Image (cartoon, rainbow, N blue to C red; front, side, top):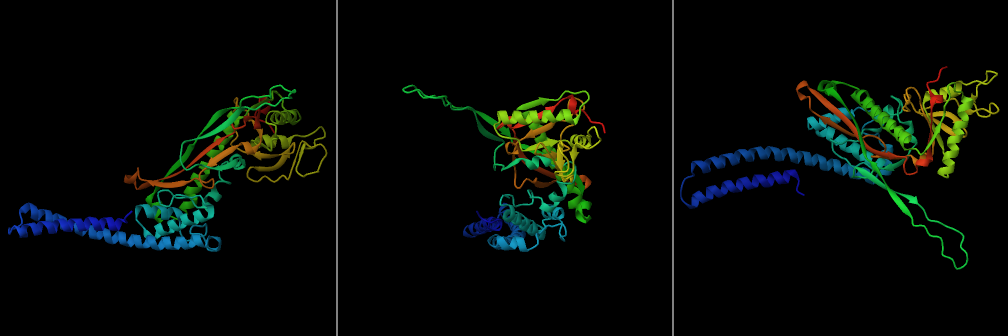
Length: 431
């Protein structure tokens, strides 16, 4: 495919050739140019002058791009050393702002900003091996911004983080998985009798690819003259993205799990709740034929467990392993983003504030399951994201920043791998 400068040059040459043909025709016919011919030549020369300016600009741009591509090629060849030894283009302590460059590249045609963005995209390719967009209208957000945002702002995505990760296919709005619903049979054979046979059957599991997105109107003044816009705007958008995605994943566990344990109790206690937990575990082992490996609950439910005392006012859950006999729960006592530091019945407890607390008015639920059967497909490395700038409010000198990402998730490949405990016994606790 021809470069833009070459296409413009062809157009310019065609205009000049047409003008020359008009002059030659008049010369052969030994006559002056007509008014129409003279006007056509004048229009052609005006167009040629404009094309000359465009060609000059595009030659300059193409030269810069070729230089950038050459550097990018060298970076790919030396990926093992270059990316790891040289500072990244956009970093927390860097001199350039990702947001400001994305804005300048789109609205000002800033060549230096475009070059830095191209270098950033190339760094993402080398580092993550899964970035496909390479222009300013679809940029992968730098990792340092999303690291600041996802774990600490809002509720984050602790349940999504324990899911079994898959790369989202490059196209399509649904994912299809075949689930075997009728298996083969095996039986004792008596001599000469027919061998046991049961035809296998399957059911198609269709999973929708969902889009989660958010936007923020930012003034041009803030983008052009402000500082710290990356941290202020992107942190909020990205954390909102992750929190919304995580809440959807939690809801998928709720509606898709295959085992329910009801805990009905007007005066619930941790001692009465504990058998329900074991009931959920045995239901998974009985129907999924493998054990769960995680418990997901709201922070208030873990706090309720930790606050429980025995008849001698000793805690039923102790903060140090081997610190007490017959403790309901044990742990390090150090709560670190989702990982509560505690385990119950040998299973680690993940606390997630995205677990709803308004089920049946004021109840929360506890989910026990096998995280290998919580499947999550995401674009890229699990970050949103494509960043876009739109101008629906250009008259107010505002630019709309939009962050979005695609994902799909399910527990319905093996629903029996997950169980929910819910009921009046899990109403809002008092302390």
